[in-house]
Amino acid sequence: MVRFFLAFIAALALAFPAVAQKAYEPQVGQAGKDVIWVPTPDEVVDRMLRMAQVTPNDLVYDLGAGNGKIAIAAAKLGARAVGIEYNPEMAKHAQGNVVAAGVTAKARIMQGDIF
Image (spheres, rainbow, N blue to C red):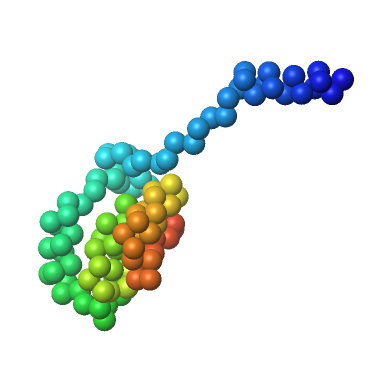
């Protein structure tokens, strides 16, 4: 009986292979709550932070943080930064970008509705 049960489990495992979890990858133009997502070009991010004269003494909030690019750039300038993103998958992705950029001491992305 045990042998039959083990054979049955093995057959099920072969018949229904585990579905691989694909990492979330944002798509330009994907729908958001009120707008579509389009990443801000790096040169525009740099220009915005320069125009705002962001320094290590500042706290930057990025409403609709998307992939976290603005919060990460502000943190690299020494500022503290908080990004707020509506899409839970995008918020998780953006926080992963914060970790990959090595700025977790200065920046974080949270999922939330800015409205």
